[in-house]
Length: 261
Image (tube, rainbow, N blue to C red; front, side, top):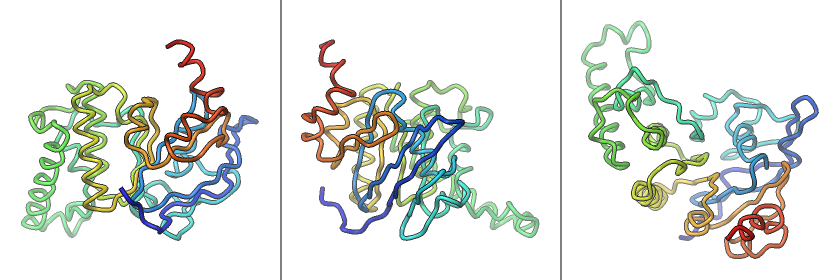
């Protein structure tokens, strides 16, 4: 699928240091709008640390992060999310005592009941909640969780919680999604369904994806581009086939797997 010529995200020479440890070191890249880019690398390569910096969970020690032409490296996480850059997590963050549908409805902004004046506008609150629930049910149907809509989220399996986390991210209608191992622990049938959903979002809404994933077959099949990290640095960046044949990648990441094959 062709990507846009417009750069939606630019990471410029970012580094972070925690007590002498540098999980991300002088990393730079640009992401085109409506593209699908995967970040791979061995455990400890700095992939999740990179996502933490982009999403604002941690602040860069040096460098810049530009999203849609605006610097975001010094603003709070919720402000970054409001600008349309949303992330998911390795461990899905859900509210167990709310229903599955309510978990999604919580992600919708603009509830009139969130302020004192709106609290007394019963009709506006009811219309908002009906609209939010309808959208939540649509998202749950996309990922095969609609039958759990009125069940407490705490009953979901680990894989199902990841699906819920992705659905909740989509409720915010992002222009770009950071997906941190979204398919880990999800059965193959649901993985295929999720990939179809992501492809539809990309086609219909020009959504952009940056993905951390360990399943190389999935990465090679869905990615326009692959960025490889090791020891906090980018060691390769290119088309999927070229990455798989790169000697640095083989040494840092693929070599041990090939030896075990």
